[in-house]
Image (cartoon, rainbow, N blue to C red; front, top):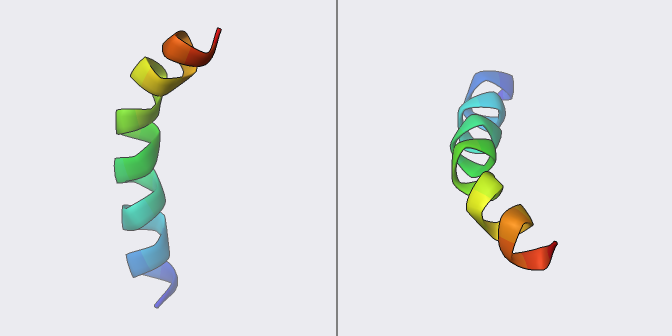
Length: 24
């Protein structure tokens, strides 16, 4: 379960930079 959570968050973090750039 912990591994799945880490994988999910790693994917979210990979997709995040663009969202953060849009917010800033």
